[in-house]
Image (cartoon, rainbow, N blue to C red):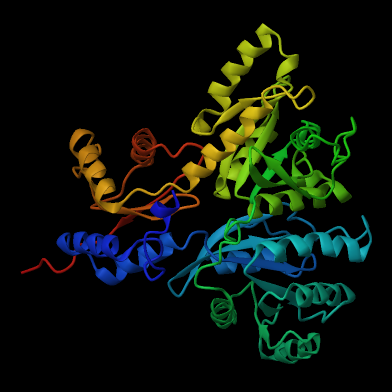
Length: 487
């Protein structure tokens, strides 16, 4: 498998020199602009986009700034602190470079005390980010809370762009200059509400962000693969970890939510060393959570971000809930390999098993590609099937299809199942390549817009042809005006 993945140098992402040349020749034949093609290929091949976290006290204008960066009203803005509680991620672009923006929201200062609450919110945002925009209200100046965040930023060592917000005119420049005292470098005077100064700040952001983030998961040769155990509170995550480890490593209690912080455990299974992360359960509607539960859910999300495989535990004795679906969506959107483990299987009667199968068909039909295991963390039933399922998901996550074979496959699809005619036009896929793995990422170049239903059809056929069991697929479609064929 590794021979397939690493078939060339880093110059063209994960494409080897021969495949890159083959791909670019196809682009030339179809009359595409080569610089644009190279840019699209680079963007898709570099894996996850760089992540920019926007952090700061409540009500300093973080969501307003996020909307300004996005160029549209996406983040909820209200003139009171604490409106944003969920971690919300958006995709943005500036000067031709794409990146993700995380709007982190404020924190409740009276829940766990100032230091603890600031740490819980800011530590997660900083840990998951490649760079940070620290927003300070220039009209108020640096507060004790701001100073607490500065300490965290210094410890983390991530690049920081200091945004002095609410500078609506030249008279506010002096207020912004006072923020040099924070020791984070030049304060960028900005009015997120009116857009003043945001361009200069975003230029600084691009300087701080990497062209492509280093993939920390699975990067160390010979290091244990990271498995995140995720699921609703009390579905048996800690019990499962103890059964896998064959000893009591994690506290298990009937009281839901005993686990607060992820606990990394190095475990030997089937001759392989794995690193299991037992995460705190994600509760219903994060923004209604209080205190430790809220911060535990943030740390759980961070654990998924750092993992390679997410094993989602579902309580088979209960109906599949919206929470279960949200957790699965979180793992898929994070681009992680996925295994679904139905726990407490030993407690099911025939009737419950029948209805569970119907629920799986209707509620989880979009992830039929994920390996499934029916287990009992209490009795150890079918625990031996867990590792093969994880290995299958990892194999799918790292599978790579050579460019020649992919284009032969795409040609067959276009011939046998052409895109429906819309508005008198029939778009078709011209050529494509797999630009990356972990998860598999494809770039398709087409003569026109491909409808969502046709994209889903392409994904389904890719899975039928090449496997990709246990992994989400990311498919980007580029539509370009043809160049160079005018006589």
